[in-house]
Image (cartoon, rainbow, N blue to C red; front, side, top):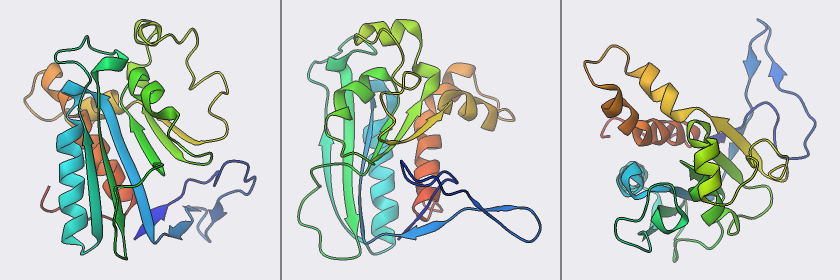
Length: 206
């Protein structure tokens, strides 16, 4: 399995991206023997479905795996709160896997609550992908953030990727006859595609 690294490399790595003969950036590719990924968001964000689809892709490649679904602490918890966070963890490898893993190598956080609820489980140097469209003042206040952790430097020891996942999803579906609400609901599938590309998973069946 492989992961395509961004030009800035790992946290603290000051090396620059490689440049090819035609001036195009060449992103370094790292070979890994095992990875633990956790998808986290509101119960309505489809994290269980996303994790299930990624599991199917991984199984199709023949990797051994173990999963751990985690459901909200409360039924119908208020949107954007810590009690409403749902997650799906997947540990996959090119060798025998016995557990779903303890510390995620990658966290996909669809909102501030998902980030705060899971940040304590991440080792330094882990990859964090956040949906910045949901990091509004209101959503930040719901979980006690006075300032966005994406902007205050508190995540400097992690490999942070702030992405406007909701907006990117809506743009990707511009040619489809769907309401904006339905397009926004598909952001979990955009996240699935991103992780599938990052770890060279097949996407034909999903």
